[in-house]
Image (tube, rainbow, N blue to C red; front, side, top):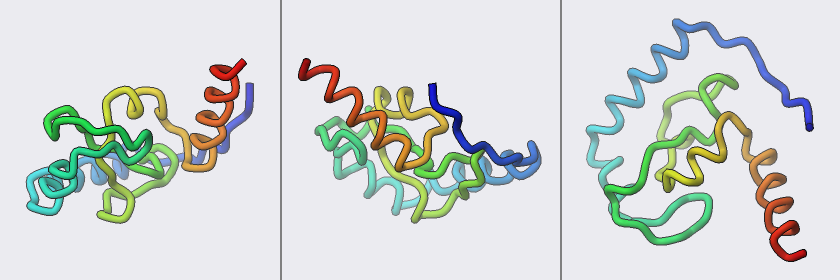
Amino acid sequence: MQDYFIITVSETEIKKEKEKARRLRKTQWWYRQKAKGICYYCKRKFHPKELTMDHIVPLVRGGKSTKGNIVAVCKECNTKKKYLLPWEWEEYVKEFINRAEI
């Protein structure tokens, strides 16, 4: 098991960023992201209602609720990614693919 770098983010800061994300969910920008129907991580096609909002850099790791840090993803990828950073997630996916090929 790999040790992951975790910074301390206050509950107040996380709450503030979650509120920003809730506001972004109501924007045309977010509806357009979901309307594409493509999961940011696995690139599979989904009905827009099946896509969820994910922070590329998770809030608990210091990420912010900005358009540059929020993507539409399938529930499976969102659940598996948890609090991983992009390079940690890529490492996980590569390891997963290698195991599947064996």
